[in-house]
Length: 446
Image (cartoon, rainbow, N blue to C red; front, top):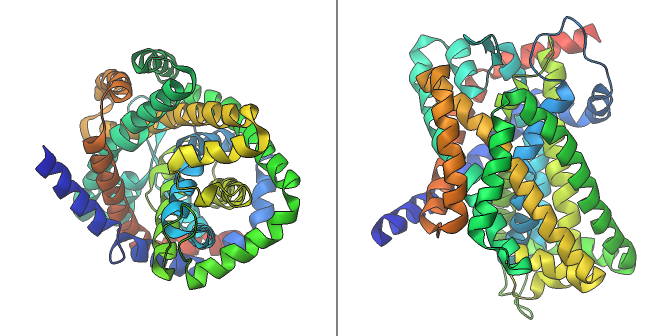
């Protein structure tokens, strides 16, 4: 078993290293950004206004555009924003935050493109529901000769969901609640499994309803606490930005509990954790946006790109600044422990509770969001009749994840999470003329 784990870790290192996914995701993001003539940046305010527009009565789909965004955010806002940012700073230094911004800015075009294709090439399944995502825009957009690539994405997505979207999340919640409040992991696993089961049995509409309530509430609470810390440490904020920019291009020498990081380490960890957090390029969020009630692929694409902006430019930035101004980034702590220390140092016990409860709720919403992604991938491979069996396996995996050691699961999760991106990026490149054409049509109408 140890040999298998070592092999998986080597494959993960190769896939997420400097030669495969990070440069590929970056190049595709830059290509789409330039091909769209910077539209995701120029139309950011317009995209925000779209959220307040009422859903048209004749719009086809299952959930509102806002609910689709919240469902997608439920799967992305979580451990990546709290533990992921801390990990990036631990290995890459403060400069890693700058490269998280860079990968997010080009990732907005990637997320926009995924949603445009998801809505354009979605279809109605045998239960009468609108479904879509990379497997559908590969099959319907590229033709029958590319169905093997669509099936590959669905397989990778179905397996990755059990890792990154299920067992890893329940394990994180069980660990943090056990450390903070002494709650047995088995109890945590059973409670999460019960609540998640009630939620996912209602399908995408119930998942969207829960996500649209929980995600804004918890995000606002977490952001409010982070802003309070930055106001209390306002005199340190300008120097924090100076440190970020200097470290981004010059690296950072060892200091206190920080081991030091080179220029390349800042890029590697900033980009990797940024992608892990916002999932731009993986294709997962497109599955949620395909269910939106809309007849305009471009409008939904604009709503989708807000997810990357909110997740990384807002959430991750505030977390990173808190870690820097509090001094926690150089403490030697890692992951969620570093974030908890930062909030505890400034806000006292309430700060620690905010991180603990926030991580638990964010992880729960990730579980219900990814349950929809996973079951749609399973339905593509095996038909909708397989969904009840998939849900049973999903609920069982939540309990298992809470009580078992997950070193091997982490390795599988990272590997298949990365493998999801490869078919999706191929499709985005091959279908980029369609993306640009749809966008030009929208611009001409305006």
